Length: 204
Image 1 (cartoon, one colour):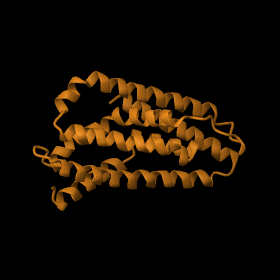
Image 2 (cartoon, rainbow, N blue to C red; image 1 turned 90 degrees about the vertical axis):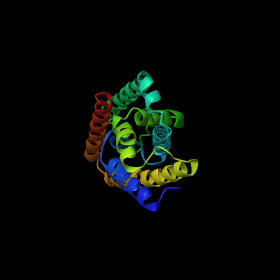
Image 3 (cartoon, helix red, strand yellow; image 1 turned 30 degrees about the vertical axis):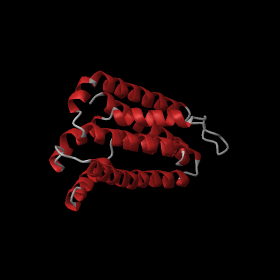
């Protein structure tokens, strides 16, 4: 088992890394602003599962295998960036159509989940944390199943707290947007943020 001090250090480092705005946070906030919190739940689940996968890969010493599978991760990265650009374009073009009775185009839970997974697996910021920073915090040479469970549980608690806080803030902002001009502005700002997230993922 890992000592509490190690878990606290891991939680603090992860909190700083995950809480800093980046491609994943930008995509999450943009989706909540344009579609609401309920529709983004599969996206959140995919983000958390994707991070658990990165953590497991780092713990099990599969960095070499990850390097060999670099083309696969590159494909995920480019696919995630392309999908974000697609969503960004759709948000921008539909920004003017913001009548209260307008129903957003349906997006399946699987599509939302898949986009979240592609963004998480292709995010270089996440890979850098687990492969470069994590070994400096935790000795990964002899991690037991119990220790893996401790780290995974800590990771999930930290990510849930941070991502739900971002989602709550975006949801509150969404409800404050009562006039048409404000809704157009936030839709276009969300489209810009999502495009910036796509560029950030594709170019790192």
